[in-house]
Image (cartoon, rainbow, N blue to C red; front, side, top):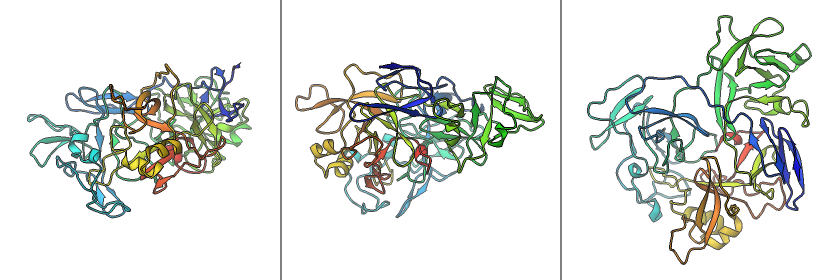
Length: 475
């Protein structure tokens, strides 16, 4: 079956029957068995404000996080902001020294129940923070500049800081554009202390913000209400008439505002100045019930969606084997080719360093305890890997096919005769899964299985849109 569709999502039942419904802000150029879809405008990159930087520091525009700072080899720079946990705090204080030490963490710190202090960590997690997060060191003759300052490490090394926070690289990042160590995407449900990539501020006029999300860099106003554009407009011309204005409010530009980069000032039909991005006049939706909403993109109907959430940069879409489906909580999640909801496993060990344990190179004891009571076979049956088709590849730096040893959960070692090798899909170098308890499309029974509803150590569904909370902004 080959169908020409625009701005649709696909819901495939386990029986193989295919249904189509709208996915605001995305477009499907061609649909073959409900498997192919892509993001509109994914080639557009977010503009940023240039800042003074030390020699060797560069800006890399990444697929998910937008512009980030990187070292001279292109490796992303991260900060480790202090965060209070249930039984203590860890991380770096602003304008303070680095707490990411050279000491090997061998036992838990007792910062997050149910882990008691002094519990022996799994062998793969007995690492020094500075080994997993190499500090960005400054030369002896380096001089501070603007937001870039230098702090002294306990061993006397000089370490660069940005905006008061010491800077690190991640041992997971190998190529320019990799941001596998952490994310700017945050929510109140995050467990543990996380690393955050640092970058220059987005080049948006006063009154706008950019919100990181799994679907891209979402544009909102200062109160975080979504910004929309309309297909009925012409380049740099608003056609929103009096009837249209009953539901939509043009985003006003100050009288002294001038064109800048991708931003232009247009005359609204009623005579006042209105902001436009890349030639598209901007609006807010009067009927949005909350912030960061996608509701306006559902207007007027699913057959001809004419309103779109605006992004400064779209995220690169998943491979063709995946699809998007509506789910019971009123949002939309990523699904495999059979319509089963896709899950990510996330974990952080309870040491002072709060090192991530959700990667195949990390200890698998935490994951096996959650999904199979320590039994690898039961774990595989409960949360099966999403198997990649033979020869499958991805053009996205976010998605890859990796070889996993099904018995250990780690990368399959070449020449290991005892390994049961599976070719599985991975997002940001982490395998993705389905859940055996999801018996039909649109259910997410595996979401929240684990400690602290899965946010500390467990499984979370891959959310693309959530009309009732912040789930879409937590990956």
